[in-house]
Image (cartoon, rainbow, N blue to C red; front, top):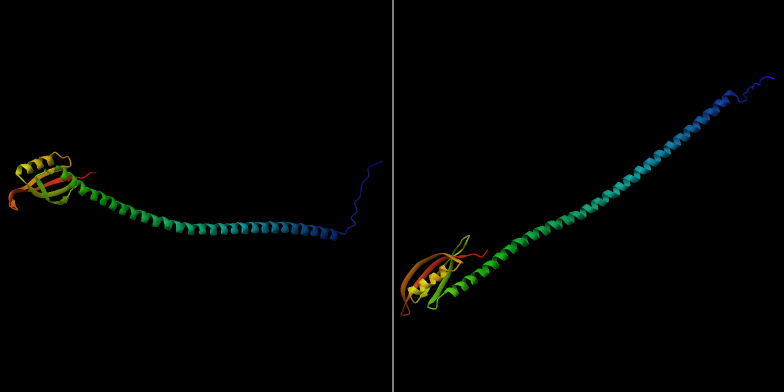
Length: 190
């Protein structure tokens, strides 16, 4: 026997077949369009979420910035107060140092004064880098007592640039005494 040949008979009219194909293409196009629309909607939703997250982050940063501005202002005020305190502290330290200076000078001179002499005045002549220039005046029973006092002053490490400015014999309340004036530099304690 021979080969069998199949014959295909198309019972569906050609127009119907084309309409079915067209419908299939339209359905496929609609499906693709729906997928694209869904993808675009998802993209839009994703971008909207990102924008809202960014807006929240911006509001958070703005709030932190406002808080930090307050803190920065507090730090500025604190630094200004600290600077004012440092200046006041330096003034107080200087006053405390100066306050202890004169009792120290008086103590030192009190140690050096001899029994036959009296101190009438003590004054600051001027302030120098090395110390304070001081002038003292007083009375002594004799020039020898003043000379011994000057020798004691010269042997003291805190006293320098010693000058006996004036010695004069005077009478005070009927007594003959020597009036003296001595200038010297009293070294600062550093």
